[in-house]
Every structure is written in structure tokens, then in C-alpha cells.
Length: 193
Image (tube, rainbow, N blue to C red; front, top):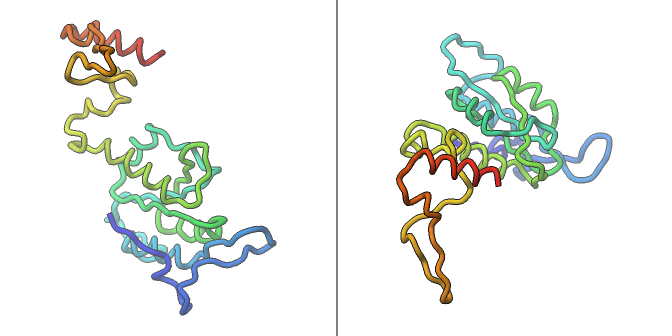
């Protein structure tokens, strides 16, 4: 994983990466070229490069209006050799950056959740975590990926009984039986509740 800061690619002495939007409106817009150059460096290639031995790459662009990011999308991202996550700020990134970046690699536009964030860093963190946990060996066993198995939101561990303020809290008996069919049925029921 490599991090590129668009400020490292500006041509002004202030390191400024934003300007007022054309057409008016609140806030500032990130300028296109620093973003393009940062992505270009992350991919290690030139705009328009079509080398046949290139890795399978994808550029992820975060936008409140993008396709909802789901576990299915996280599974799809594991198929790429390189994924560049473009994290905007302010009112967004000059649309011309996206047009230029399409010459480097395909772009997927995602929204992470229904909330709108100040920047793309939190959605990027969510994507990195969701994709990473699907990679072989990251969780130890593939069965640990909850959405690929019968799982409930309720989980328990040792000891079987705990005491708190003179009250006892026990693990559901079915979980202590070792009967996998009954446990899976319980988990399925608990998941629906």
C-alpha cells in the first residue's frame, strides 16, 4: 500500500490544492492535476499507457452519489492487483480529473453508507478493511468472514456464567452442546431477530 499526497504535486509555493468553484457556490474544489499526478504515481505509469503486461488495476472514486459499497463489491475488489482510492475533500474534485484518470484505469464510483463525510479518508478506511478481511489468511480461516457463514450478532465466550451485581448471565445452553445442527439453527434464528 502506498500513499500519495496531492500537495506533493502542486506547482505553487503554498502547496494549495483547492480553488473556488466555477459557477459559484460554497466551499472550495480540489484542482484536477495534483490528483491526477498523485494517482499516476501510485499506479507507476503515464497517462494513456497501454502496456500489455499491466496489472489489473482499478481507481475508486468516492462520491455521495456513487454506487453503494457492499460486501459483494468488496469481494469484487479482491480480484484486482492494484486499487487506488481517491479521497477528495472540500466540495469535491474537479471533474476533469476523473476524465483524465479514465485513461489510466477503469474507475468505480462508490458511496460508503448513507452519511456524507468531510473527505474520502473514512470511506477509504472502510473499503480497505472490508477488502483486506477477504484476502486469504488475513482472518486465519475463510470461515471467519461472517457474511459467508451462518452467524448471529450475538456471540459469547468463556466463562459460561458471569456474575454482575448479584445477577448471573449465562451462555445460551444450545451453544454448549456441541450439536452443530442445533447451533446453526439457533444462529440462523438469532440472526433474523
